[in-house]
Image (cartoon, rainbow, N blue to C red; front, side):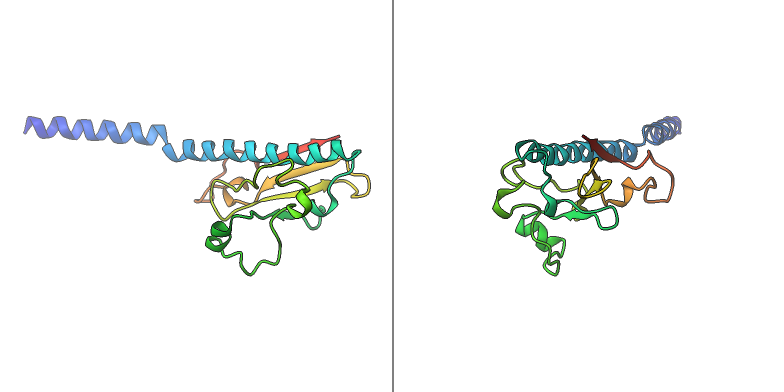
Length: 160
């Protein structure tokens, strides 16, 4: 009987510790950290291109505020898994080596596979103030799976 009481107390303490630690929150923070690194990598690659081309951005590699461009990967297995066969969009900026592989080895994919990054010009396309990159994953919209608020929406914004 006393052994059962000790086991019950240990179980209650273990449950309280697991709830207090909240591993889901830490996994989400790890994914957010990976996203931030990916977004900074994409933005840096685009800026590298612009620097080497007299300040000109690769226009067909960046969308507008009204129509942001989704950055699709080239990986055939991932495109099949995410059912991108119907998507007419080619892999992002691989034509003539504009961005991939000249400035970026491969297109990064959101840690929650089958969600991708988006990119748009800030301001007027003819004289942009910079670019913005973000993930289309639902958990980056400021709400978690249960609809509870998370940290603010993650975006990387680089300006000239």
